[in-house]
Amino acid sequence: MRKKTMIGIFGLIICLMIIQISPIRGANFKRDDPSGDVNYHTNFTIASYSLNVYPEIDLTSLEIEGEIITLSFVAAPVADANYLYKIFIFWIGDDAVGNWTKYLFSDSENSVHTRIEDSTGGAIMDETQTGVIDTAGLTMLLPIYNSSMIPNISNPGAVSVFTYYYVDQEGGESYQDDIIYVSGLFPGFTFWITMTGIATIAVIGLIIKRKKN
Image (cartoon, rainbow, N blue to C red; front, top):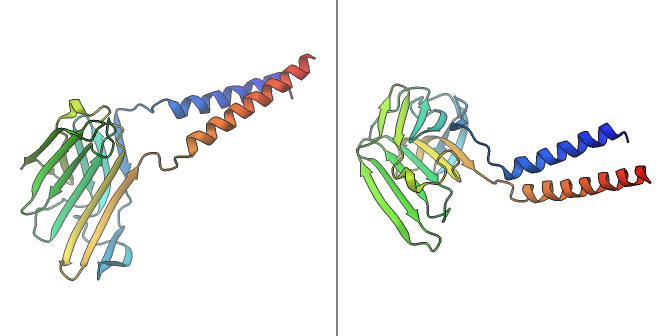
């Protein structure tokens, strides 16, 4: 193996190992969602997939920019008794499970509930604000409160967005869309990159040593 090739492989492995331990920094956090993917539920189970109906609940993206979360839709979201928008954000912090913000929006609900806990599970802050979620054109604007207690707003631990149009709520008949994101989806990924990187570097080291001898 040529020296230049070995150096190139060595550099690539180092880059991979650095990437996994270095946070990917960007101005925003964004997750896109295809349009026309509304699901039909009856008897609380999915009966039909990927329907191009009820564009008011058909999500196209979620973006965190600064202290605002912007949800975008195919059509303007509405505050109506048959509609419900539910958003749950788990923030990374001392207590990943206990640091969260929950949003509810419908005709009779407009609230933001934020809870921040320390590493022992004790609540540092637990507050609810009402009447603060706004709609603008094809978007819904969700404010992030107590942002100074959230270490990295642009890097949430988990995000779940569920939107509903209820045909018969008691009978479990509805149309739904969602955006789901969980960081660290493959917990073993970091370990195996590390082990592969160390093994490869060791092999390259042995090859270089043999070449010298």
